[in-house]
Length: 100
Image 1 (cartoon, one colour):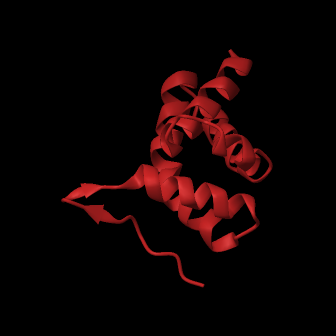
Image 2 (image 1 turned 30 degrees about the vertical axis):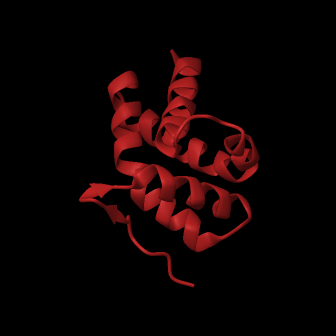
């Protein structure tokens, strides 16, 4: 099953709606959705972790931990008022705070 790239709506990237669907599907074990979610958000989330920690190695570890947590925490996202990126960014910030 192929997962389409980010959709465009009125010329604006519609990542939050797509991201929400990808989180839900990844939580159900859909490997393609997980890969698409990673492709969509890994770069900005890594940048956020690096900005907070100032350490590329630690930022990479945090990024891995957050993405691995998506499967077990996807149900919590369904109840979150945050968009997909904001939810993932909050997870990054919480993980980084534990290291500081």
